[in-house]
Length: 316
Image (cartoon, rainbow, N blue to C red; front, side):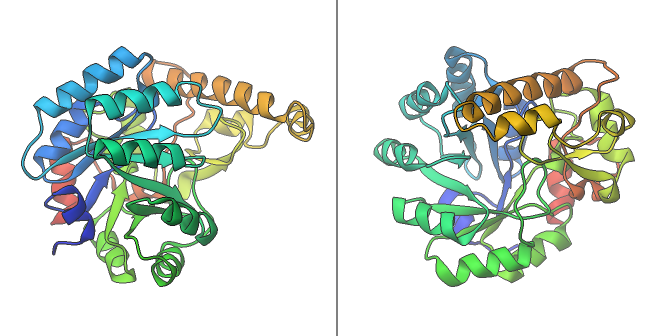
């Protein structure tokens, strides 16, 4: 793989970011990602306290290698009550980059720039991509309709080409990458790199149950469906028997409350909290309530492997 604007921005060997995944990503995974020549990212929400987040940053800084980078993902909307404290810690301690999701990145960009931290912003369409460019983002992460979790509506090719034609900042593609051929496709469309998540769920270093990891091996692209039952926003999950049992649509009461202008914000916050707790239990404990978030790129996952081997499969 030749160098791209992403490899230059982050001083990495390969144009790949190990995507931040709620509950899955951890320090061990990112250390191995850096050692393999790519960038690794962890959701700040994976840490319950700011002290835990600070300790993770220090551990990653101590493990930094010449051709590897690490960063953190921030949920920047009002539903994340920890956001401002997390941003303050990241700017105080320092990291290579921050990925913003689900809200305006303006405050993050301004504070990160002063701290020498690059900011990449998740976008799903041109409207928001133009906004983050105008705010000073270093790159746009184009979340397409093959991404795991909360995905976009456009195909990888359509979204990458649209953003490339209208932006001056680099475009990083997120979604639909499970092998080297997929990376080659994204780069041929004009992406400067890729953000890869689901293939790393089935890594030895991932902090989830072996049942979750094995599910990513046993199930494939045709088993990925959309559900509204986790956060209230459509999200991709593996179609396990439990998911089939509880259904994928919001209840009539949730729909009714979501239409109430005064209650909508609070309903979303409660729904998000309940959904995340259920997802955490499924990912970290032995339970029949298996709501496992993943994307269709698990089609290429054939075994539970070390992170370094997953990277090798992606680049060779």
